[in-house]
Image (cartoon, rainbow, N blue to C red; front, top):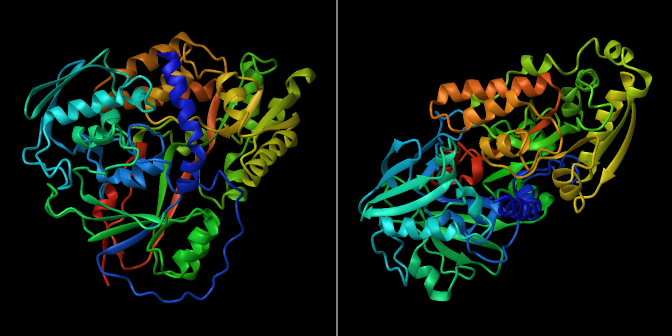
Length: 537
């Protein structure tokens, strides 16, 4: 199991530049704001929305790729799932709260057994060789088992699953190896697609299609590799969706070209880098916008508790006290981002309030805490991941903050090629700041990174009390109690000054006034919010 999980994480990391080019400015240097050029007016086409996709794809098999672009910004959006994450104007994000997609209802029979009752009358898209037949429990069974193929990159998402059985045409029974409070989130993942057996069997896989799902979007092909095109599914089982007649995901790799396409109204909706986000809002007060808090995504800072002087709690606390992540955020990321422990969260109530984070960081007495340390305990090496100018500048500012309070800091950089093995796997650092490993659920982070026995625990901190909290929350089905356990875990880690995320990403979205209904939930590859978009002339 350890090997499979590491392989899955490594595969996800290889896709990380693609993910970040779609959903983050952190993989590339932060550009200067694009000048406010006069836009060539392009009238909106009622019922049609143009959105940028960051790259073309090598293949289209959603079970054979960990790419967020394929799952959420390309052919993957035609597929349904058993569950999906909630989205809409009344949903407070970040959240991994789920709702039925293909299911009509579900119940938890016991700690490890779930029964799902499927919607009746759900039809596959009317495309050969599936030809619009009804979707049944055997299809879901086939898809989940296919995803669980040990060599497949998304198998680890469902690693808690022990058995899957189709009890009748519309009933599915799933049994887990052990209780897992994140199991429903794993089923709702944008990577846990339900595919048609006939489509797979046509060519042996789905690398070259056919792209046939049961969701709100019908695949309408590509246009000379410049994008992915979709039209509304008239037989979709939610009669008022999708809200668009057509959705065009135009492939625009270059960040500046995407911005130019938005300014000239060739794109209706765009994720903008922070500098351009603020400039657009200033120049166009009529644009709609959303700042989405991406808990579990951003830059993490960790202290190696096995490496002197950081084996001394007083030293680690002095390091935390000397750091001011809010000052660095404002300077490097135009005030966008927040401070958190670093893990994905099940709901917004899981995030420690800023005042609690400030009880450990940017303390007025930091200089005195450093002066109280032995002279030999004031020298540190900070490893900075070199993913571009913004990363390097951020690392430089953190080093400067530490130096200002009395530490002697030596910085070293590590390339994206060496970073995963050196930092994530081997723990070859005294202190580091860089991107978090691709982790999508609370338990993936808590069990792997924070637990004493986790394969991602390279910081070396071990605590029976912390392990007990992690193990208890991992199986806790009571949402309120699990949240309290999660907050207790975060308080423990901050009090012990082990690691945190000084720059948790906020993605920034803008759209022209004719676009309605954009209320994104981007958790774990979610994409259903696209079905709720509308364009009015």
